[in-house]
Image (cartoon, rainbow, N blue to C red; front, top):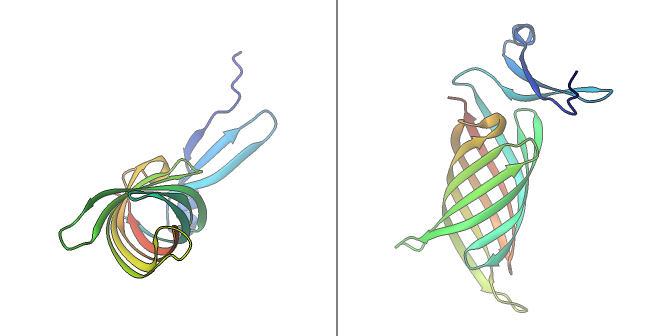
Length: 175
């Protein structure tokens, strides 16, 4: 008999869906002595869920940010790393970024943003500026439980001498 250290099974539980008016996928991870089950994503084509959360990044250079985000997604909290990469500066002075979020449940999201920054002052102790920004984005689930999901989000935040704090709201729809 072969030993399997960890096996992930995805089971369709129609009875849970019938009881709650929705359908669900459950991930079951048998280990040596325990079994864990967690909801990984709502099922059903066309289903839309709300996302909201906060994040914090550091500006690494003129075109790169790196940090983390905490996202409330359909009743669960995702902890994600976030990498922002400047794609271009538009003729009107706005910026186009691509943000990649990689979360602990193996969700991978790409955000294609349109960013407007309002600089308020220069930093007194280091390079950079103090200001506020707004972004609108197209969000795509690239892998994991939300692969294929798409939506839009709105991000608002502050820049303080290379440190960025933001909040966001989004909606994602299953294809």
